[in-house]
Length: 583
Image (cartoon, rainbow, N blue to C red):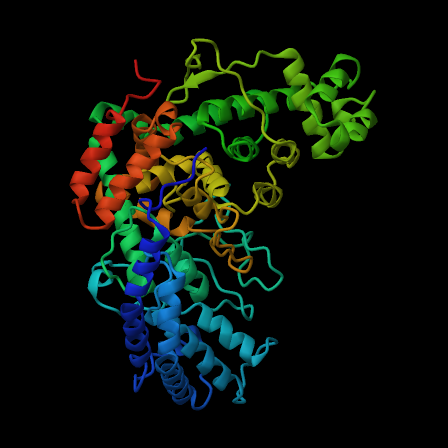
């Protein structure tokens, strides 16, 4: 698969010349952003709002810290400006030195100053640690004007408060619901929230609680081909620009889908719930366990294959308890699994019944080996209403075959079934990825009032209106990883934030609000639309992906309008093809 197009080819001399041209602007930006801190009044303290006593001289220390940082910034601009211009990519605003960098340094300086002042906190935590926790929850820029002033979104402090247990933040005031799991899963020892006792969600507010992560992850988006050069300064404004751009692309796709298709596409999770609930009833497993199986087997699978693999796992786990791992099953396992890694494990299972096995990884080997030995690999197309339609066919006109997940993912599906519906086990088996956890909630309760949103590869492609695949950097960034040799996003085991997921989630929520549908309905409608726009054959061609990115680069350079860019994209891709399940 080819690399994502970033810029028209330039000679080394042209590239170097452009970098030198950027020295002046970058130096002025550094001076401007740093001088903005000089003499600045301290920001309104949020400590009293959180129930934490302010230390003496807190505001004075912050003012001193900000002014020190401002003076240092101005003094080093002659070095920082040229360095930024020579290091950054000429086409990108990714490494621009903005006011947030200086403000972040000033915050650290003020924090260090106030940490030296004795004051009583009345908790077991250290004074400085509690101050840092409060600071990490501060919603920077919530009072700024411009585009953000139009967004009627409450600051973080409006719906979180200090819990009775010191240092633990209560979750948002979302509606409690049986069978749901947190869509953030903090794992750090020093985590401040419990994903099992509270409903933790993911969105831009969760980014704001960790300013360095917020700034870093938002800046990554500035190098994307379709992000316009509007001169947006600061993390808040740039995040707002990204969310609005993604939202408007989603609305474009939504409005481009014929009503008769849109009316059915929005039922995807209703159908998934119906299909999964039917399996749960047929095999007498809990709806939570069945939903967990589907979610655990979802990575890098379309829904048709995902649903069929889930059925196979539930069926074999339920009906083959007394089947012995021997003879043909043993031989099939040796064919399927790497001998060096799994050989000894496979041989240790000889003569044992499925019901005798204790480890989910062992059961996963058994389940897959039995299924591939005894069942057809073909699978069916599923309608949005959850009905099986007809066999899925390849481009060559032959039945498509299921491709099994990794043994670890199948083992997690087995853990769901072994759990008996225990949400603590199911939550742990779902892992840390927001996508899998949201997918579980969308299947388990598609009509939840809590706005769960499943963002996968196609959902990223829809938000950016680009023919992206699982290995492309933008998809990796959403999940919390990057490409080798490139700067990737930051993740947090303390908050459970992974990649850029929260930005996409809020874009879908906003788009849904403007069309009066649920977020999961906006996702399923645009998911089908982008799959119809960028078919596997189309996006499998490197030249097509480069062509689309060149269109976006023209938009980025203000050479064409947004409407013109979208029109050219749809024309080149050949329009939006109808879904496979359409009659």
